[in-house]
Length: 122
Image (cartoon, rainbow, N blue to C red; front, side):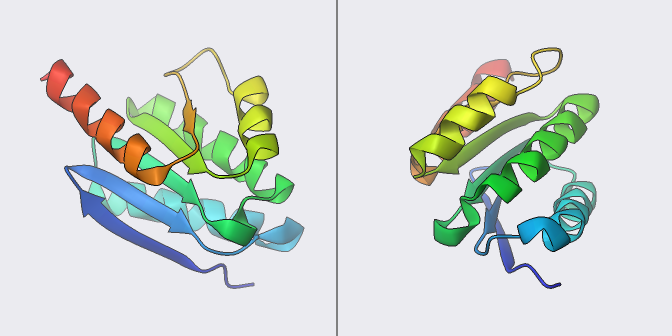
């Protein structure tokens, strides 16, 4: 199954936008794609945007696994989604043992705050 994903570097932040609901069959493919992008770009932070239909329950598990990956790599990770139910799920299920997962409604806010955090840490 192909899951539509796009990516860009904005203000030093790797922004990965998921455009489709991965469904149960596409979760492993999506996680592998995110992992490949993180390893290929070696960013200091990641913003994962769940766009429209991608903001589904099936994406929550992928986001949480990506967050664990970023925590192991020492990366700051934020998620942006307009879906309030998905934001609540992510906030409730995020692993508190690693780097805090920041969940926001707007992608531009997530990018700006993540970039500011990088600048403050430098």
